[in-house]
Image (cartoon, rainbow, N blue to C red; front, side, top):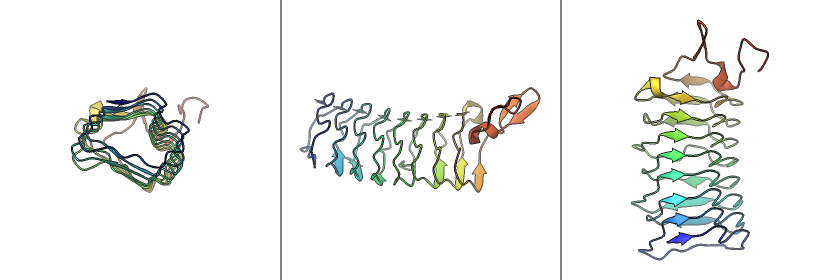
Length: 212
């Protein structure tokens, strides 16, 4: 039921085949960490959890697929950290959380890998930092985007529509170092005394201090 801690870490594994009907529920911490030969994988529908850094530094991993009926609820910290070749991935509709550093440094990932109808709630800090995303449309279910979540991408257009704008939490510098031409938010900024302030989502410091 479990592929355990570091099971195939630093291995020369080139492919993974799961038999039909397998009941694996967890791909453990660093399970395939730095398995450089791995270029694709199909994750069984029975998998509920992919633990921290499970596929981190799999430099040649290009394609990740999830079986129909997937029960996966979260992509946790650093799962695909540094997967510089990853370009084809669509998360199952069951995913509610994309945690810190989940897709950090995935230089070939050009879009957020979610389906219409996904009720994603949270995108963690640095989760898509240094990826290659150029267009961002998020589901209305989103309630939190962490610090530096999309720093140093290629974003030109961002649209965020949420069910309850008062519940939306936007982290510091989430859009820093991008090429934004269009931004649509259900949000006016933060109060600083009697003034609104939006600059922090682009990485600006407190306008009443010397930070930038």
